[in-house]
Image (cartoon, rainbow, N blue to C red; front, side, top):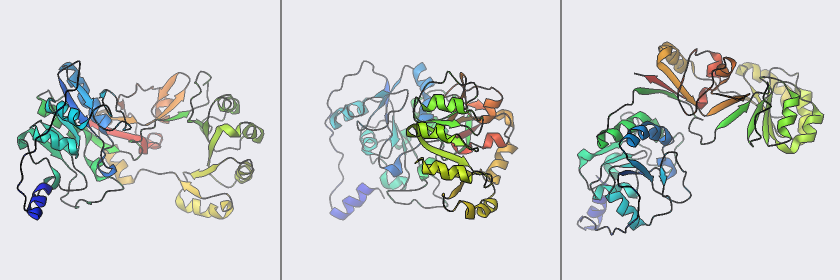
Length: 390
């Protein structure tokens, strides 16, 4: 039962179609779709940019623009016209009534679009579609998507971790949008794997010290001393910007003392207890240290007694064997991936250490061939989206 029917039953009031007052909003074009991606946190889909990247080429060819609606402080997606915070509710209604398609989450705008019988692609997450779908509008012009609730009921909660809405594949949304617009479906892939960090809006950049003098000072760089131990480069970059440092060897304490104001955190890769003295002295300088390790958990447990005064040793995440086996069993020439983590070296940008070692640069944000799915490739699995081309 739709919520509006429940309200009517409870109050004894008949359901009548509302009149929505529209107010003119000027646009320099006429062909557009509306996009409203933000609502309560539990409803917010983390892969909207992938959906937009899928459909924008077809929309541009057809001369169709995308208008992003919503609040002024909401995240701005790439490739759209940003109207967040610039329209009143009545102007929003005006734009929705003239839209070729409305795409977004379960929201007030979806109900307005339904009342105008505008085609809709909408996502539902923490409740059943039939409870909250637009009450008005031709159902044949609406594609309403939700997670698979055949095995697990919706949470009906305002918070979820992980969010079930993210189980909807981006290509499913993209195909639905192109179908309702009557445009050619050019999407020829299926999502195989999405890591937990892939949806992070921050692009993680790792700097490999080798021959990297041209790298500009950008706050937030992670200097990978564990890949190439180069104190001269660390000094050159730390004197210009804020950095995080990853190392598996002791770094000059004089260098750390001199630039500690620009070293936000130092990650020390624990392999045994040989770095214990360096860690204690670094902590005494007032530099924050996080201990990490790729050792087996039983080996980490044996080292806990040595490091109990300096902090817990965090085990680096590993892809589970079942998922890795499924990926490795697929034809490698059909697999591609994108990453939310990059490695910078000289003038090159690389999606992972494996690509950097082979000098296979990335052209962001395009998918790259997986190539050899070895241990080096899976090191950064939590930042990946892997697809299989059909």
